[in-house]
Length: 239
Image (cartoon, rainbow, N blue to C red; front, top):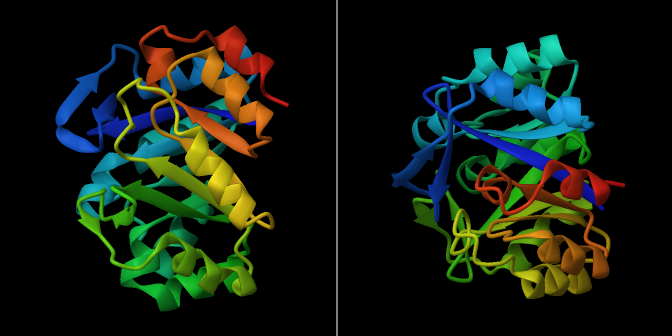
C-alpha cells in the first residue's frame, strides 16, 4: 500500500476543509515548503498537493509554491485543482509535476480528458472520483453529475485509465473514519484499476483496514495535522 501525505493549498497557505466546504477552513502554521520538508525528511518520496484556488477558480495560484517544493526537495508530486484543458495539463507537467488528478475536466471537457489519457498515459493522469451522496462531484465539489459511478468508470478503461483517486466528500476532513466499504466495492467491481483512498481517515486502524483489502494507496491529511496519526505510523505502512 502506498501512503501519500497531503498538503492542501489555499492562497499559498496550508489548510484543510471540512466536507470540501471553503467556508469551513482550518489554517496550519507551517508554510507549504516547511510542511513538505517534514514529509520528505520522514522518508516520503511522493506527495499529494491540492490547489484549492485552482479547483474553485480555475487559476493555478499555488503553482509557484508547488514548483519550489519539487525543485528544492527533489520530491515527486501529484496535484489536482484547476486542470480544465489539455494545455493546462501540459503546463503542469512541464513545471515538474509527476501526476495529475482530474475531476472537472472529465465531466466538462471530456475530449481533452480523453486526449490526456491517450497521449499522456494512464499512469500520469489520475481520475479524481469524488463521491458526494453517492454521486460524482466536481468543480471544487460544488456540482454533481447524474451519471452513475459504474457508468462513469467503464467509459475510460478502454482508453487507458489506470489510477483512480476516490474521495468520500461526506467524510473528508471530518476524522470520522474512512469508508472502507466504498473502496472494497470499487475494487471488486473494477479489479483492473488501482484505487487511492481519500477522505475521513481517522487513525492507524483505518490504515490497517485499507491494507487488509489491499487498496493501492491512501492519502493522509487531517489525521496527521490533528495528531491522530504519526509520521512513523504512516511510513510504516508505506510499501
